[in-house]
Length: 51
Image (cartoon, rainbow, N blue to C red; front, side):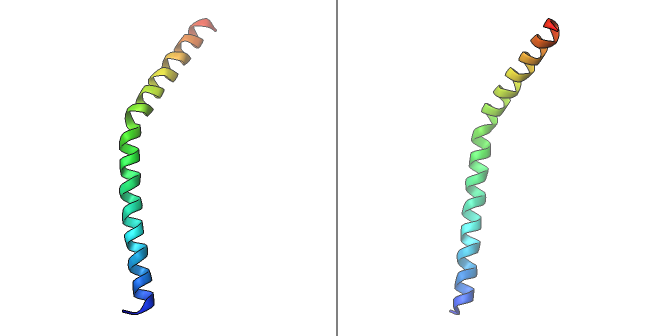
């Protein structure tokens, strides 16, 4: 197999694994992000009431 084809296959495999990893990380961070968003919204509402 030519070296360039082998390198291309390695890059494609690495890109696939990185996309899968990013998908898992984003799915795992969804509840954390929603909780953070709720807390920020509540804090902004309390500041508006005070001001």
